[in-house]
Image (cartoon, rainbow, N blue to C red; front, side, top):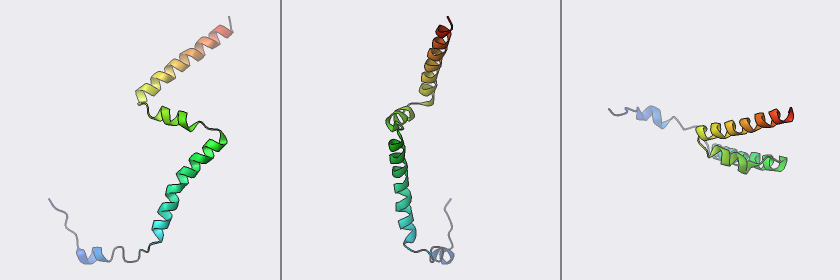
Length: 80
């Protein structure tokens, strides 16, 4: 099943577009890098975030459970 396109309608679709959106796209692509740099300057450990995001959700949950168990153990030991 093919796609049927009215060429007369399609040819005028982008007629009003100019080259300016390309400039906006480039600016939008640099903003995440600026945000990352701002986070680094603020003191956020980006490497730790990237390492954590490289894990599967199941691996992240397992690490969370391990950390939670340690916190509970430390809280319990504090009250002994």
